[in-house]
Figure (cartoon, one colour):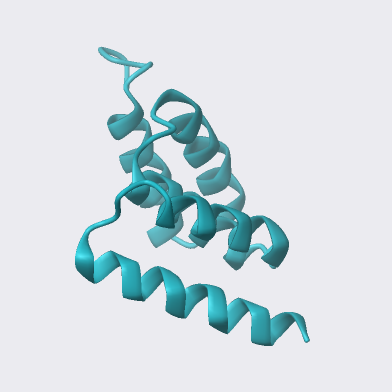
Length: 93
């Protein structure tokens, strides 16, 4: 981070570490930065959506999962994103 503070992939990695440690507030702060730095990456966008989901910000999570679907996700990622959207839509009801 010190050497490349404006690198989206590095910032995403830091945010994902916070996510894995269960610090979702810090995770979302870093993942929002990563998404601003690299807005066209489906994985970074999915990570941000995952963070929003953990904070029960379901509308934001769905918005970013749907955005990730428009960013040429990998084949296995497409089905995972659709599944996450469906799951959150059920939670919202």
